[in-house]
Image 1 (tube, rainbow, N blue to C red):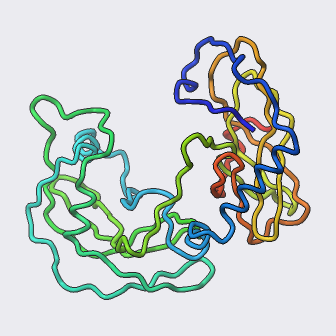
Image 2: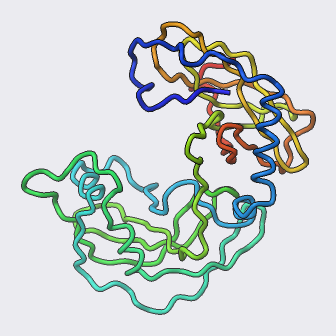
Image 3: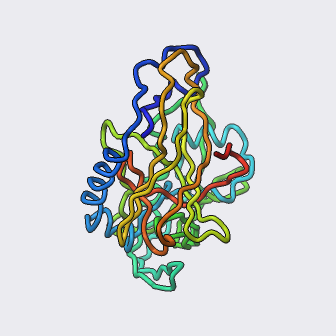
Length: 290
């Protein structure tokens, strides 16, 4: 298993890597994998991931944005909005959402006012404060109900969204109109648990293989990838070993292949470090391959 690599590891500097050098034995990996399976299989998070609406990102769709002006980005990030029009207030009926597997769900919607109240909030962490004279306000001049695409645990779907028009801005600001009661937040790692595998994909013409994306230190030795399988889940891990000596703290991304006893099918892939699902999506050309 991979050691915790904090945000500091993104900066290249010399430091001792001696605080960690032990490999995780096959027995310890299997024990951890069994714990992960026992905690996840059949849990509320498992049920929501397989049959609910779990967005993999935020509810604000910026797909139509193409190189927005700096003032728009800054004002949006800082939540500098001004409502300059009445928003639609007509009652809304439930909407039908079609999933990639063909199934359909009925979901309640929020009003334009509720959506505006949410998406107009400043970011949780503001890196660039408004200049001394203040940000240029984003004046909302109208809203209409349209559509947006959302990446979810069950694939990409199209959902109703409120499309807001701002004066002087060419594109529209879209915020998903699905009510919070129909949405389950993506599960987060518990304190002290570190992500081992960050993505996976199937391997063309090799149905038993999975391509795993992971991070590692510059001086780490990689001994291979491992998988623990059940009828519904596959727990994956990369067998890494620290050098125990002086090394930079650069976090490097790479891919590695693990072979399963049978094709993945509809089984979920879980990360051994966090015990959470690994999202499908790897671009091998961008990463080193082992």
